[in-house]
Image (cartoon, rainbow, N blue to C red):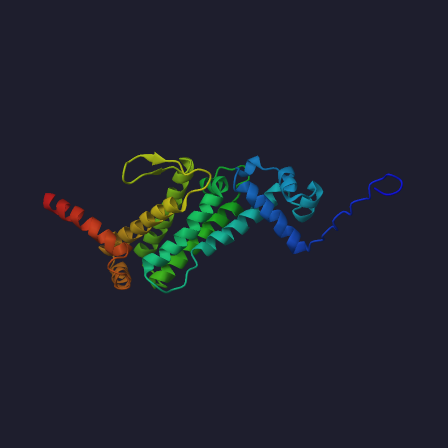
Amino acid sequence: MNGSGTAPAVPRPAYRRLSVEQRRSQLLAAALGLFAQRAPEDVSLDDVATAAEVSRPLVYRYFPGGKQQLYEAALRSAADELEQCFAEPESGPLTQRLGHALDRYLTFVDQHDAGFSALLQGGSVVETSRTTAIVDEVRRAAAEQILRHLGEPEPSPRLRTTVRMWISAVEAASLIWLDEDKRHPDASTGSTGAAGAALPAALRAELRDWLVDHFVALLTATAARDPQTARVVRAALKGEAPDGPAGELARRILPVVSEAAHLL
């Protein structure tokens, strides 16, 4: 205390001014955090302002189109991140490259559960032709990345369809996770275990490996009807290690196929 008995004033921290881009990034980060946990229609501009610790008028200053503009901008930001999930160096076995891409993709799904579900399932009151186009762009970009890893710049209709079918399967598997509260059947006991607030790495890895198996099996089935896909499969298998995912899948499938052949 000073001589008058009054406590000295505590200096307030200086207000840090942000650039236009920094402020916009701050608001988008706050919005993405909310959209990750709630459906878009359940998030208000007041919620975003509170999360970003700014005023509602400031949110409107950067997004004069209101919630719709903010949602589309946040969706575009999320889509850019999703597209990057499939960007992988063109080296190493194909299954290893796919595994790395799926690790990033499934981690994104785990961290943006409610928002990811609303994004892919549609039906949101803020869904428009623009938001739908953003989602389709992510799917097309993922397909192009995978075809690049397959070494086919001009894929046949069957090969392109196979890749797009697999991307749809990955999306469906992700949505089933979320629909079942990230519960996962235990392969050894047949029981189901809850993942908790975040999907443990072991469960993500198991689903990742299953999706890689699915891709190899889908390609192999198409190879039986499409010469180009057959060439792709042969080239890919040459780069796989005998004890790698493709080799393990072949060892698990061959007994089943052999037994089925005897029954035909």
